[in-house]
Image 1 (cartoon, rainbow, N blue to C red):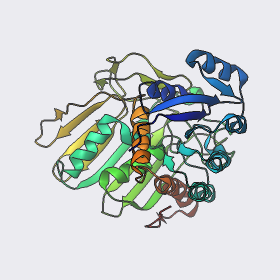
Image 2: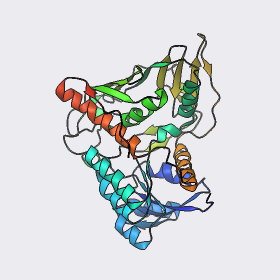
Image 3: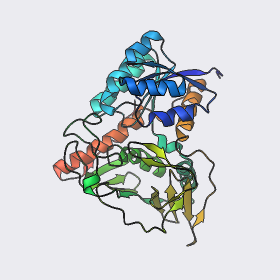
Image 4: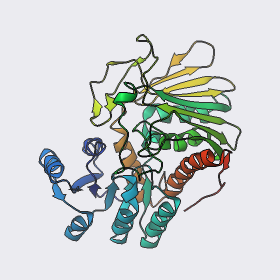
Amino acid sequence: MSNSVRTIGILGLGNVAEPHLLSYRSLSCVKVIAVVDPRADRLDEICRRYALEGFSSAQAMLDAGCPDIVCILTPAQTHRPLVEMCASAGAHILCEKPMAVTLEDAAAMAEGCRRAGVEFFYGSSYRYLPAVQEAKTLIASGAIGNPRVVIEEMLGGEGASAYRPLSAAHYPQDGPGGGGYGLVDHGIHMLDVFPWLCDSSIERVFGRGDRTGHEPRTEFAHLQMRNGATGILIYDGSTRPAVLPSAGVFSEAGTWIDGRGWMGDAGEWDSGAGNIRVYGTEGSLQIFHYANKLLLNRSGQPEERRLPAGTAPYHFGAQMRAFCASLDRGEAVPTSASDGIRALRGLLGIYASESSGTWENLPEFMVF
């Protein structure tokens, strides 16, 4: 096993970049040596704040010296050329979600890494949140019996007039898009996490989603797993929440605010804490993924499970630590291109189902 420190280059300095940078500071296995962004003011700001070397393009960074790992945090429609460029230079890849905007691009990215002999790690960061990991352990142990229904609802905002969707710079005009807490940009996490929690794969999907440049609607998806479990997603950021002030939890992390990142202090009351509910034959779970809380109900009296620290943004560090450990051991990466492609296939299947008006069946095996 190697004990060397791996160098990291970060492509894209949007809101999620600083959480990555903060979490990597606490790791002994990596060192960030370069950041890339075409916006000179943003590049200068991050370089000064974190004492890093900056480049205006990925090619300029590679010409100066290829890092061991490149983290691709740019919009999804830019992922393919960047992955192919960096992989051919010899860098292992950590790629944020969604993996791509088309299955053709995603498959080409996986093939490019395979051909170059480098590893592709899909950034399914929710798997590394302590509450989600503990939920996975409890479900696998049979604590709630067989999972039957998994639900995430995110309904709220400040009304339709205040709603600000992601632009065509993020997702192509007229294609799948919407808001930061919508089906494409956020629900893609659940299309990976739901089947992972249920230890199954998605058999078929039905729903509808927003498109870039179009008026927002209520987005929804019905996921049917091969083991019989059902997943339900409902999103609408152009309305207002119906949560009572007394409902919620004391969060162990700040709150993610679109355009600003994680804000606020740990320990504050969060009346609308995002959560996933899992209902099984013997009990249920309520997973407050960012707030780092987990409630287990097996007897009619819900109990709160004790969880380790490490919620957002430090789950990005846990993710990178797992990537490095797999490289050290020469093992398969924990979340691979296959996981990213499966999630993307589910997402695109939802949009296809709206066009056809029928359920969209998904292929059972897709391994890269």
